[in-house]
Amino acid sequence: HCSIYLTCIRALYHEAVEQHKLSTEYMPTIAVLCNSGLHEGTSSSSPGSLANTWAPTLEMLYDQRIPIVATSYTWEEARDDVTQLAAVLGLELETISGSEVNGELEKEKGGDEGGLARMKVKVTWGEGEGESEGRGAGGELVIPPSRNPFRGLLPMPDTLCDNKFFYNNNYYFMLAQW
Image (tube, rainbow, N blue to C red; front, side, top):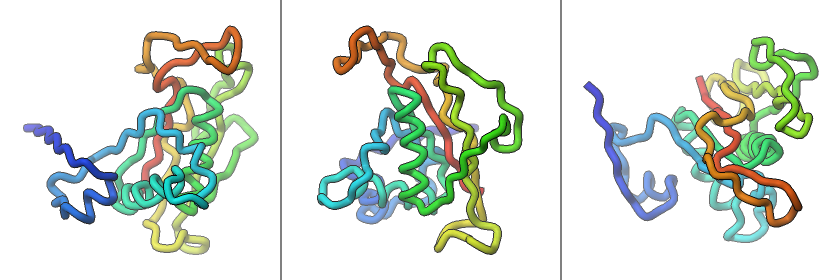
């Protein structure tokens, strides 16, 4: 028996949890951040910056062990989103030079990604020495930035570049704590 609950609360996630005291029965099992723009949150100097609005929510989702899936328009944005997410959560981000991703061999990709191979990253934390402050036992970047098979179907013109198009939710990645 499976039940799906949809609750609409006009607030940022971390505010909804704190103010409305959501019970664990209604906590999400996964968080999906569609075209989140995490990569734009590199400065926390202004109160309305993305770093200030996303950081408390990302930290709460992570500390609650809720897997985070984020999408982006381009591979470069997905790569930068991973970097920003790791920075916000205080995680170590290691780029792997070989063809191994999260313990598995990965084929190089090119062509429609502008000749760029899939990002090869490993996020490590936990396990004793070097454990992130206040964080759980560990986790991983379960899915590195990858082409989303469920991306938008309609190409949208990039107004900054001639002859370039992008798709909604074109790339995605998944971070999970274990």
